[in-house]
Picture 1 (cartoon, rainbow over the protein chains, first blue to last red):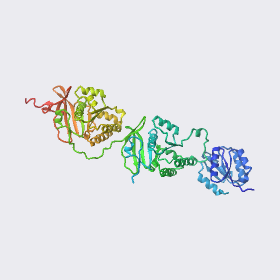
Picture 2: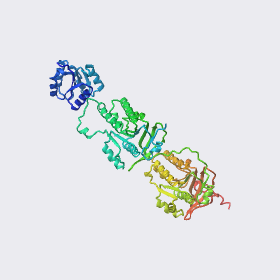
Picture 3: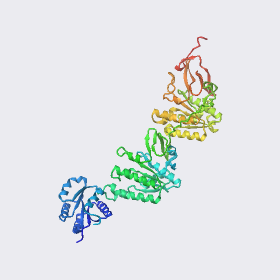
Picture 4: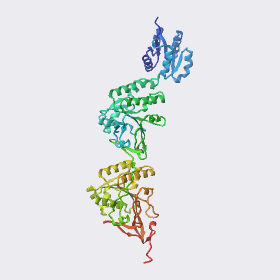
Length: 123
Length: 483
């Protein structure tokens, strides 16, 4: 079994997805992406290679919580990203077992610090 | 070492800047919408092109194609100006999906910075115009970042040998004080009652012309009219006297008016103020001296015909090249524009006498406060008399008779000489009288004389010594009973 080294980026908005994934790649991380629940399912089949997941919940329905559940069961740390106007979901996010919650727009510096606390680029 | 100066390219602006922008400095042009900031910048870039320099325009708001089109309307040829167009394209709206994962500051700044750095290093411009720096504010996460980024951006440009002009849009919601602190010089463009104004509040490393100057956006670009600030040069006592050509008036003045002095001819409508003024012009022409006459009230034809009928041949003086008459439409001129016109006419013709008919018309041109009138007319007169040019101001007072009055707004203080004309009622008849109220350099006759305008010119009688109560307007004969 290969050591997990990828960051799974989940975002319903493809521009957001490209920006976030592009940023992480530039920082030296390897990234896999999902923009729909179907794509996410496909990525989750290969859960072993995923070290960390960044999930933007905007645009998804409540089935996204099941996916979070799945990550938690596999002990994959994940970060939930939410828009300011959905702050009420913060509790639901924490209940789902998220390692941390971050409100959009993300501050790149803070995001990097969070990722670095869990993995290093060489992983 | 004295820093090299770069011509601004705007007619009149270099006078205010004492020769132009100091090279490798960054200047801020600020003002509201439509104040001409971009046009100023284009002038600056074009001046560089005409000197064989490299000019770069970094546009963040208006797209290049619009700028080129608008510039063409002003007759500007932007062919050789390099453009870095960072304005948002229409695709941005139509195609690119919006994002919210990062703030725009984090997403957009880097590509923008990259493009600027590459362009600067590639073309090494001598002049850079950034329109507008305010846009960078949105690419910074906070005020501190903005200040730091702007500062290092400007430093980057200057270190690469450029002289920079940048604009800012300021509003109460988004003040631009921070940019004013960063700039080496600050130029403010504004609207005021007197027209469009341009003011400098900061100019590191050089002196500049203080005060509120005016400018105009013409069909061929911007023209700046610097406010005249007469230098405090000691004025020599006038050594020559200029004659009116009427012996009795010269007697009243004990020889004439001092050359290079300011004379106010005041009186109610129809007393012959203009005629008296033109008499001095006729005499000056006879001596071979050039005069300038600015008439705010009459057309040139009207003035010419009227003067000819009283033996003051204005058309002949114009034909002989001794006089220029300009009919000024007050609403078309601001005070600084008018002053610029006078200054250029004086220089062109080496004029010795300037007559302004009348201060009421001039006052219309001021379109501002009363105190502004005094300031402007004072600077103009002072400027001319410093150059040894005599000035005649025609001033109409509205009261026909009654209590004596020199002027309605205190301009008599700036006159060296005051000649007054007034109506007298003598034995039931309306007559005119002339007198001198003030003559700074030398003595004058303290009596009034009767004046008449005939087809042979001005006729002035003997001193009216036998009248009493002249200043009341209804004098009485004092010696009649004794006769």
